Length: 550
Ligand code: GLU
Image (tube, rainbow, N blue to C red):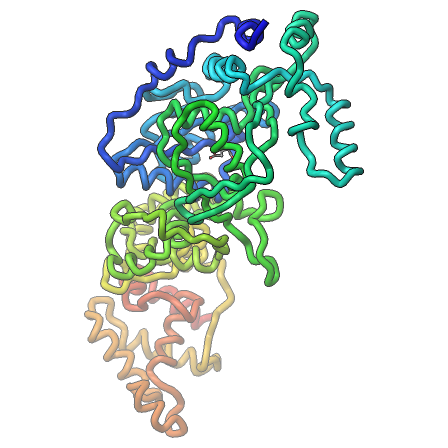
């Protein structure tokens, strides 16, 4: 009896690995083309760190004319949820991340290197596990959970490194015929890797982000095939990334400590390892101390949060590129109008330590991104958002489409467009006063310097009677407000007022604020002239007159 008999008994139907090596040949790509993959579990949930990684995967493949794969790692079937794959596919699509190969819906995939769902690759893993067994590099382990617990307890009380390795690896050197007998007797088992590593030796590796790193070798006989017949992450990673001919494995740095094991697995399997790039974890500032952003504690850990808030996807992507690459910010400054697809991402410019997620900065980025949108686009996006999250706003917008676009177009499409919207959930509060039914509900008038009722009435009366004409151009309109100011004892120019403030009641800005607040309730709005043009003559007069009456 030898390893071949054992391997044949365990995997009687497995094919030779040469079959798969030929079926999935080296890719015929240009030099430098990168093959990347995003490999989430189908939990339906996309973590901000996952989005971050997939943006990098997508971008590197795109800019090097390579291939970006979406592979689903569903070997932990306890964690699965219904429609988990399509939620990930759609979740990524919302950020314009579409794979060249891999899953494109719950059950559909594209590409020649599939299946792209690990649960459908069982025959492949079996072939490679069998290959390892034949070489004496893997073996069945019959330990019961109780036995494993016993080993652990002994190691703990003797203060020895925990794990299944060396002398602790009970079935590592188990006689083949006894193993065969146990299997024939129906004793349950799993398959373990037979590590050739030694803890007292070190390996060096160059990570594409972290640079040179050094670790002790792996010596753990880790599980490669579980009791349910499916592979563990480590084994599937080696087999899949090899057969999918992935050139760059970009993954979170929680995996960096597994690198010695992975490199050993690649060697044992006869594979050339890919380049690894371990990305820094996205952190959160929690009252002055940095910690990992957490799915449990932080709503912003889930990508769905950004949709709920109405932060546009391209703003989120732009922000993540900001924290990904130190050369993004200077690039953006030099190219304010270029699309992010033109930005060239460099792995060696990735930040090594965990970037802190900064909501204020994200909203700032978002403001800038939205400021470049057309009014029509803002209308469409806000309506789309409102149809899910704010029915009232949805009705307001859809009942008044053309008018709303005019409202949103105020101070837009100019060299210095307005920057007051950072998310679609802001829009309602920002434009409310432009709609009669909403304006009539508002009664918190933000008067500033001039707040005396009689003075306000006087200014408004005089404005309607002698100075307001909807047909005036902007200069004439403003000159008339200056005339009105002078007439009421306020100075025409702010500059003059600043020189001798004691000489005047106030200046033209104080007077225009009275008109602004009466018309909108707000002291801070976009351009008042444009607002009045959009409201129209009748509405302006009606609002001012009603206000005076009150
Ligand atoms: N399924 C693994 C995870 O979600 C993938 C890690 C990797 O990219 O290799 O963490």
